Image 1 (cartoon, one colour):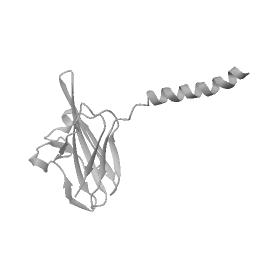
Image 2 (tube, rainbow, N blue to C red):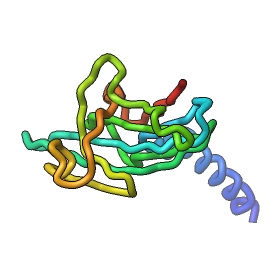
Image 3 (spheres, rainbow, N blue to C red):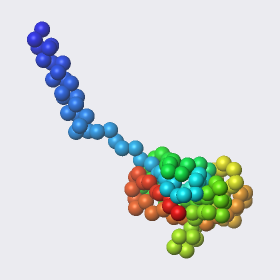
Image 4 (tube, rainbow, N blue to C red):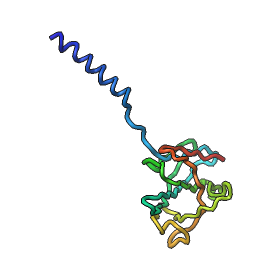
Length: 151
């Protein structure tokens, strides 16, 4: 009986030690936060990547992000992605966050309603939707990244 009484606490200590040495892997994702004074923002993203020498991509939207809030747009490892975003303020559609930063020219297709374009459908000229200049987000090969929008 004494052996069992000591075995249970020792097993619990051993399990705790394993959990400390080998913690659960961190979740990888791309999040956008709204730290503007513009109220709710609507955000779209475009993502490109290469695999085995071939290029792939997709653009999609829209995510509503309340002022002071954050939203996960991509829920997997982004280390090999090139990510672009386009955002506008719900209360003032002329207030945009786009490729205007650093005179970038990253045009992708989007629509006024929820959308997802893949491959050639995301590239200009657009067969549906319209073209907008997206802002490149340098995630520096991180697997997990948060991008914050400011005024």
